[in-house]
Image 1: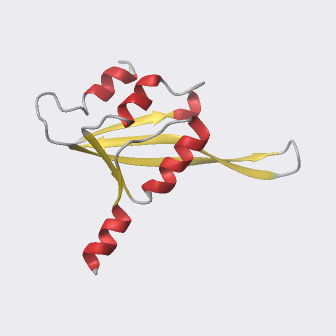
Image 2: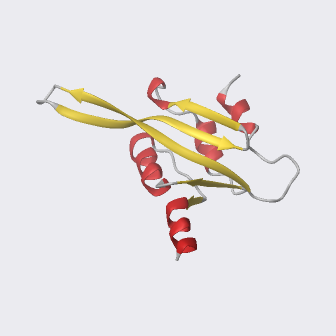
Length: 115
């Protein structure tokens, strides 16, 4: 199945309620030797989860991310949550030009609940 079809399973069909989608990234660390040894860390994997379904997107294997992924992360009826999501989204935007519309950092939320 194509990515667009898989992403559609996360989108509410008939409900007007917002849907919560978990979002996380994994970075890939490489040593670059073209100008002396340097460790390069880039986002390699984007994980999206809702309920019992998880989608693992291997960004490092793509020439460029598909438009359907960017459009999905901009949908107003979806809220994306994760620990340290601000840093994850900054990396996705810097490295791939992918932006996300509605994001909640669970670390900040947990801190407010704890206090």
